[in-house]
Length: 329
Image (cartoon, rainbow, N blue to C red):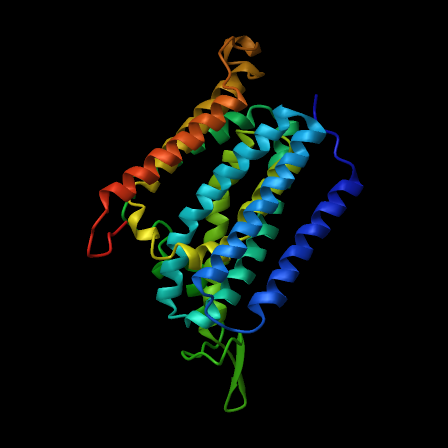
């Protein structure tokens, strides 16, 4: 039975999430500084704990099925967000963002990402409700993405240096090559100009649109409840800034992460195709009748996702153990 989420529940949830982001900004980001490992580790653990508590509330309120779907979605989105960090590192290096200002870029970029993902989630929910065959498209797209992720292993997946949005911004906006503190716009000889800080934000926002094209279909393969899709995304993005500083040095050791994520995306893609066949309404497939195929349960999905992440992480750390030079992804 579908979860009935009232408007009040939606509004309270969104208010709490906004409140957490506002608290994070004024408590840690407003004053520019480079966070210590201790600070990053503590607050990363706090936000993960909040996500787990919310999952337990879902589990208690709506049962193990939806609780499992939330946790499977959260873990998948968290893993995909770690892959995002590789690109964030490239963006910071490309625009030479000073370390003390990186928190502001990441926080604003993550908020923009959540807003855009909310729009994707709404569109996805509407499409699924109207056309069950959308699951075919989601499944095939995820399988294609998994293959592409392996093929592009070791390359800059989003082509930051060739980011079209950044090129467009440079073409139409007066860009100053130097930073003016953490300002997005500065005034040079009486003329307003944008700083590289704004371009870094544009790059992060644009690349997250591309990431959302992967992550939203992936989580819809684990749950078709928009509320769980949204909250799993929100809590996965929350604390991503702290994670950036916490495991920045560890990222280059996760050499097999792309392979693990490709396996997860392919697995969810197959799960979506099987679900689409089970709910089939397309006339040219089995005469428009449902196809009797096995469906993959949430518990199996959770075991596969966690298992793949553990194996690829351990294998990566063993592979790079004792390495003196940074390992290129």
